[in-house]
Image (cartoon, rainbow, N blue to C red; front, side, top):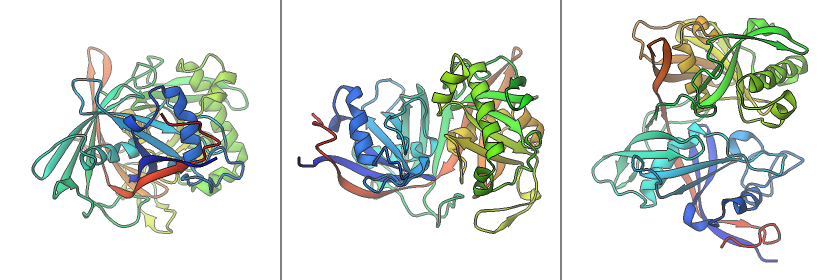
Length: 388
């Protein structure tokens, strides 16, 4: 059976890469997207390399984005994110990818979905996964999204033109509540771990945070060493499953074990001298917080954007384990410098306490993006009956 050709663009957004489709080029019935995405990315792959598709064998390179006309008056485009597990035959739509969000505004301009004159662009993005609005600000170069610039982001070689992302009212993206349990800190009784204090926060994406020292860690462990530590990884998985239930995302730990996208788990430590994946040192004085994030059993080499936003929000909420570990500047809206395996990530969050309740007004990041390839992606006709 012949292969099918679907118009597509391959893009890098921040520290992720994805195939980007127009909504118009996919079946009207979204249930039919799964076979297309799996075939295009190359999943499931028991060898975890995705050599027969466009994926790269890790979660940050196994992604699909779909862009179409807006379904809300306060947006210029709708954007749907799909996470494609490397080894499994399914597609997940329960989260947004903040890194790929940085490529959606430039994609919309370059594809003529929005018309903007001048040298600066604002594209209002409606993420359909979380029902949240993101504002993307970036420069234009002869009518197209600028690529060249002097912004460097940890985990990506070279520099690029900045894209400023502002996530508006990011609280409750998964559960409907910024603090799903109503508490800034909870103690979970976790089988195989015992009682452990955590903070469960839901901003842009849901997360559970724990102190590194409560796991017997320093906080500066590198991904390979962490993944080789089976005891710690099992504890992190058990804490995540317990938090998934406590946050109301799953009914029990068995169901939680199948909901790998939400929440993600991270552990934090105060600023400390560390060595990066590149072998370069960073000093405790250059960071405000030390952190690691784990999702789907993988330790992130560069922190996911929405999870970092959630961490920045948590750092602004007095009483959380993240706030406790963070060196905060006098300015409540100042950027927080997060030390992670690939370098130092800057995140800003505006959080206010109103009438005794915490509210996240917005979170902001700088990313870079680049269009890598445009044309058609080919999928096996034997795996996909049609795209009409």
